[in-house]
Image (cartoon, rainbow, N blue to C red; front, side, top):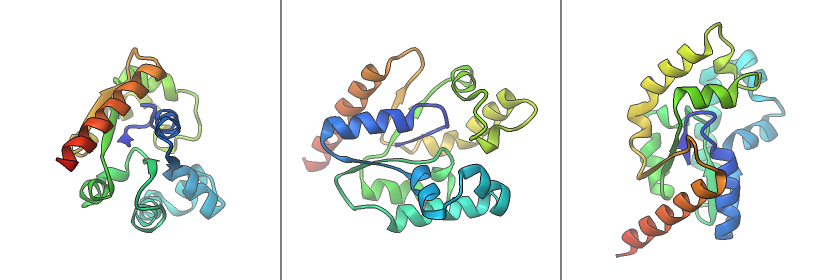
Length: 169
């Protein structure tokens, strides 16, 4: 599962994994666990490039090849060849939300180092524009604005099952 921060990846993936009887893996949580540092500390100490390398390494080597739903950090898919790699490991979903929804969901959260700027709304808009070509490589997308978690989960599960069926045909 890919998408911008605040679109609901972790919450939705956790519930989808439960419903499908799969393991949920959150890339950010695994990086924090393995490094012993928060995302903010990693960014402050080593920079964004180092964090992206940790993400990439985890996707390449850090999780099972099947039976899991992985929620990826919002910028993971912007790495060269990452969308292709993710699709080779399974079905690639993207969650979307409007700038306003993302701002509402992330405001006041100091664990979002890329939004610790003077104008977070402008930064969200800029980053969404930069990342959209990567997010559009997903095999399915769901808009999370004005939808409850159960509805989003149903959309994802329905889309997942359809894409699995198409793959096996």
